[in-house]
Each structure stands twice: as structure tokens, then as C-alpha cells.
Image (tube, rainbow, N blue to C red; front, side, top):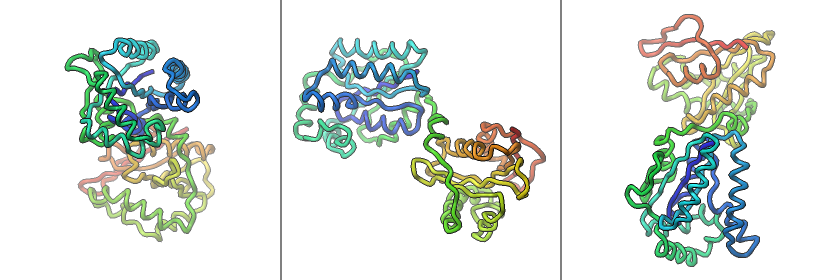
Length: 350
């Protein structure tokens, strides 16, 4: 199992960047205060030995899961041999599983960090920081007492990056980390657990149309296909929804309607051959594995179907990759729509 260690001084943004990184990778966040806050609450004071034991239990249990890895935050005193030894021990624990350890050091100006020290997200997750005046004083004192920023060339690890995030948003930093280390995206299993398909009611078809237009308009502007779902009428959508044995479903992730899939049979008496047309995900939710998971959900909802069919645009390589990843194979002849666009058929036999 892999490990990402986010290193940096107080309020540099370790937890917040970790939260954003968790959204786009198959890593889960274990930030430092997840153990510190319960110990403070229960014991009424900080107990480093108890915190360390709790961390070890979390590490050991987490390494038995199916996730790609963990994001762990740590304020490293580079002038403390004990901190070097601790990081070495944690790294070796994960490396012993065959995993890779990535080290990300965040640095930011003190004035910026003092502002971040009172943000809503920080105070929500770290009760011990809610007396901001005391927290500010503690943060400044820690920087005076310990060296919390590494020297040039001091970190010897191959998978290491230092990022000055003084003027960077957390999601931007998270993307930099993901791209720098080529980290895998979120697991299909997790997305399947977060998603369900909700049948679209007749009175919700106008909302469906709005989502469809938003999703397909970029393709229409690119190819000017006169059969594009982006310019489909509400009457056409109502007619499709009225076909027996054919249904529209909202794709719902974490309670949000993020797209739509239409599945069913052209022949109301047919139960073994089914079509997917259309399927779309709103632009802001794309590239998260949602369409893949929705197709898999559809397969599970229609266990009697032996053959699935759909078509897509040959020039849209991402779409072709998605369907091939789901197990579809190209069949039939190419259909030239115009000088920019060609449709191809896909089929999957179960």
C-alpha cells in the first residue's frame, strides 16, 4: 500500500490539500489532528504516547483495506532526530507491503498561514485551534523553537516535491501532486458505493433536458451534428421516456444529480438485448469514473440482458476508451455524419 506524507509548518494547508487530494485519487486522508483531538478531549491534555499508539492501530488496520493508499499529515521538525526516526518507521511500514512512499513538503509565508489558521474548515476539524489568539502564539513559538522547513537538498527521498502554496488554491496543489507522481484516480468500487440510479419522473423531464443540453453542447459546437442530443426537443425526450421497457435514470453521486443514463429495449417484448442511449455526465463532474460506474450499475439492474448496445463518436477517444474499458467491442460499419464526425457502434455480449 502506498503512502503520501504531507509535511509542513502549522496552517500551511496540509489537511486542506489532503482533503482535495482525496477527492481525485484512491487515497484516504488521515490528518494529524484526527488522533490529537480525541486525546485532548478525553485526557484533557496532550499525550504523545497515546496518540502514537492510536496512529499505529489506524495504520495497521488501513493497510488491510483495498485502497491504493493513505495521505498522512505531519509537522516535521527537521532538527529533531526523533522526527526523522518516526518518518523512517512509518515509511518502512508501508514499504514493507510493497508500496511506495511519496513526500510532499508545503511551504507558505507566515502571514498567509496566520490567516489560514482561522479559516472555517480548519476550526471545524481542529477544536484545539479555536482559540485563535492562543493558536497563533503557539504556531509562532513552534517556528522559533523548531526548524519546520527543509534545507535545499536535505530530503534524500526520490519521490519528493516541495511546493510553495502561498498563492495556490488547495485543489490546484492537489492536482500538481497527482500529476507529479502519476497517482491513480478514485477506485471504481468507491464510486459504485457512492452512486445510485434514480428513475426520472415525467415532471422531471424538463430538468433532464437542461442537463442534457449543458452536457452535449460542447460536442455540438465541435461537430455541428444535427442529431445531437444538445438540440433535442422536449417532445423527443418525452417520446423516448414513454417507450415501454425503456427508462431514464438520474445518476446520483453523494446526493447530487450529476448525469443521466437511458436504458432499455426498443422492442417492448425484448428482454435480452438492451441499448444505452444517451448517457451523459455534467461537465463539472466529468473524468471521475462516474460514467463507468453508472454503466456497471445498469448492468446489475438488468440481469436478464445478454447483449448491450450503444454508439459513440469515433473522434472522441475518451468515450471510446470508456466503453472499451466496460467491455464493449466495436461492431458494424462506420457511419460518416459529416466531414468532422463519424459514428461507430459498440456491443457487449455477457
